[in-house]
Amino acid sequence: MEKEKEGILLESGTNEIEIMKFTIQGEFYGINVAKVKEIMMAAKVKAMPHAHPAVEGIFKPRDLLITVIDLGYYLTGDYLEHESRDLFIVTNFNKMTVAFRVQSIEGISRISWKDIQKPDKTLTHGEEGVATGIAQCAGELVTILDFEAIVAEIAPETSIQISEVEQMGDRMLCDKPLIIAEDSILLQKMIDDSLERAGFTNVTNFNNGQEAWNYLKSIRHDSDLFDKVNLIVTDIEMPEMDGHRLTKLVKDDPRLKHLPVIIFSSLIDDQMRIKGEQLGADEQLTKPEIGNLVHVIDKLLERFDGTRRSGEAQ
Image (tube, rainbow, N blue to C red; front, side):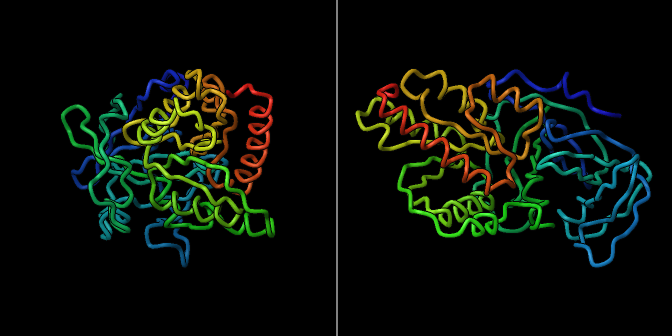
């Protein structure tokens, strides 16, 4: 059954998310509906030699060859018996289409990001390390998985590549203050390493949009505001406050609205791009494009400098 995205995407900037709940061995997990392309009955899969143990293989439902990840094995380390009622959640993010085997779909819940809590301790491995957060959906505690981090671990070549920045050669150091809002420890480190290699020396990280917004509110009346922040890079999916809500708050604020905002997310597609434009985002990039992110930061910082010099940002 193919998901009609048009009917499911939420109004921009409401800080809400729709979670599709599914089960593996009786445990409830969740995925952002915006990542789901369709749900299919599990099909015969062709095994691939020398693949990651969690990669079940490939199948070709129509004209598209799709990799299948055995999510049960990835989460538990055990090969679970495949059942005829198993389902494939076919996802689309980071410009990739990947299927995940699950045991059942339990419905969709609409909740606020404020109601999603990050686990107290994030481990490097295990399901805690790939949890965007924990939420209560229809009376059940649901672990919302970070599918982006799962794919990055299984296939690192599909994620952010610092080599894209290294290919730029030596660059001048830049101490202009940047704010990054990103909840994934893995991806936050990848972005930090890439920006450091690109010469940016003044980067402040926040684990979600709420933390970034709290900081911006605390400095918004300062006379030296624009010595403390020149540009914001934000993910979309984050506990407490998502990147769309953060963008809306910044662009609706008369003091902060001149700050360039880049949405840097695995979810960027045509419809998400429209939402970001409606909220006033200056640029929107798909997450693996770290080299492009550096170029866009350069461009927007130069434009912001011009705005400040003309007095429009004061």
